[in-house]
Length: 254
Ligand SMILES: CC(C)(COP(=O)(O)OP(=O)(O)OC[C@H]1O[C@@H](n2cnc3c(N)ncnc32)[C@H](O)[C@@H]1OP(=O)(O)O)[C@@H](O)C(=O)NCCC(=O)NCCS
Image (cartoon, rainbow, N blue to C red; front, side, top):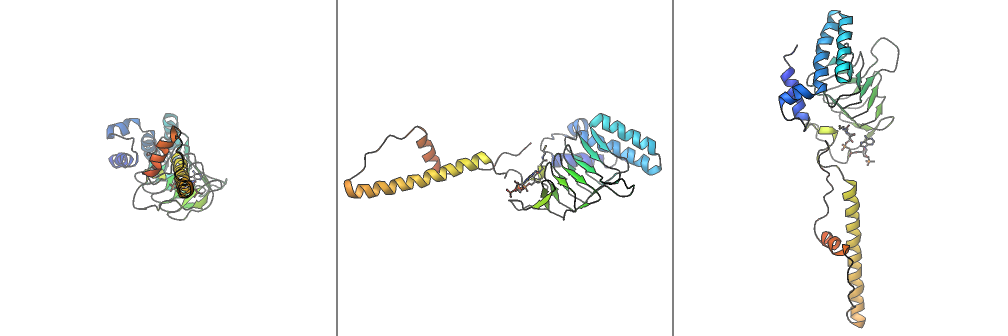
């Protein structure tokens, strides 16, 4: 039952830039603790020891804030980052290399005792606070934006956001072979402040060109125009406008 523990820990280290050592992951990651408890609870459930399975699941919930029904089927290298508030229902099926953030619900929408929770195929990433509801399938490598509510099937590789979730086209092409921490192309997230500054610099450049044109016209008629002292901010902006643009890649989120 524990033969994959090292693999689970390595999977976490590969997907969480904040994880520094295996021992740290083993001691401090509630997602790992919940998963280990679930593996035991699920085994009990499969043996028909339903109450034991449920009780172990309850202990896992008390200890980690992550509620995984012992009937849920979970693949390898499953990682719940941060964890608190995650709920995974009885008939949920989760493939390999799936990642959930805190506050995610894989829930049911019907009282029918059959399959009523979602199926997440390999490599799915579900953002913080998102709800995936009903007997729907999220295709391999698909991604759910934080706080989205997904109520219909999601095609493999698609990104969905909002309530109800709809497909969006990521600004940057997503390479499905690479894991993207936080579900985003790392280090290339547009920073709104940098965007605004770049817009300002473009305007300054345009105005500067126009002033030079006007000065040249005026110089042609009456000689050179008297030069006005520039305001304190102008040299810095003009300097920046003449050189590189402000990088609009925000630092990697954590
Ligand atoms: C959904 C997600 C995976 C998309 O990332 P991405 O590929 O970089 O996509 P983009 O940032 O290019 O966004 C594409 C569009 O979706 C919108 N969008 C992205 N995330 C969204 C969200 N959670 N809710 C609503 N809209 C969202 C963007 O505004 C953009 O819309 P636009 O084209 O109209 O401007 C990512 O935004 C996300 O939510 N990841 C989960 C992160 C998380 O939960 N982190 C927890 C850390 S503790």
